[in-house]
Length: 255
Image (cartoon, rainbow, N blue to C red; front, side, top):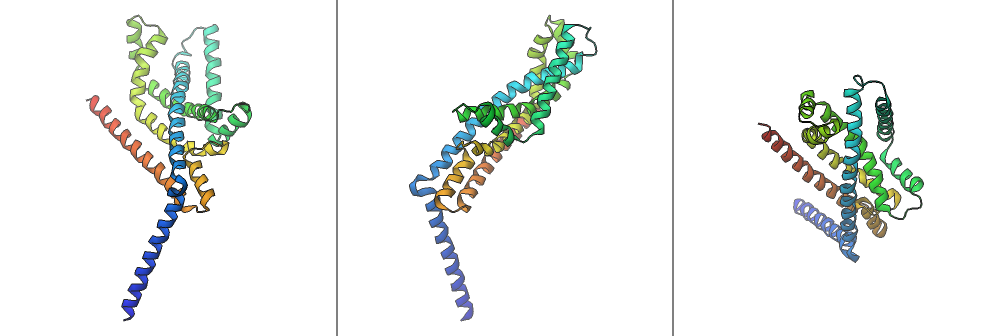
């Protein structure tokens, strides 16, 4: 008799919990179409990430070329304007890398929004610039490692074809370097997706901010925050799988 009563109470408790969760899910996501905050936030997060990655790659390639050119050629260059210019550019790139990699991305975002572009009303553009500049510092070191891994014979092959140094770098070295570091670049994209979660600090309604808006409407933190975490997790798992497939294909293409 007591066992049946305990089982009944347990079943009643479980049923009550499921009923409560159903009501909470309805209130947080279905009522007033609150799930749209998450969908719109996800779309904003993906747009900022994609554009910031493009900017980061562009900045990273330029910075990597300057750093690798300095390391490979500065000792053999004759004194003159070219050597001085290369030293200045290398010093500027090193300063850029030190500052960006040595400060938190959220601080960089707020400086960009509240100080550098204080008069701008385009929040998404400011976020793309902030995250793109931040990503560029890390992409620069990734690509530089790829360039430094290319055998010097490739430079000589380019010169034998009549290319100058810049042409050799663009047409021969950079494509090989990017192929070598493509998985690392893809991982930088994954990291950047998660870093954009601080966009809400400057009022951008990204995915994380969408969850905060729902929480402020329902005063219930658990469902929206769990949903945000789950969406980020799904995105990261998806792109991690894509990176694994890419790595396998690159290994097979080298055989």
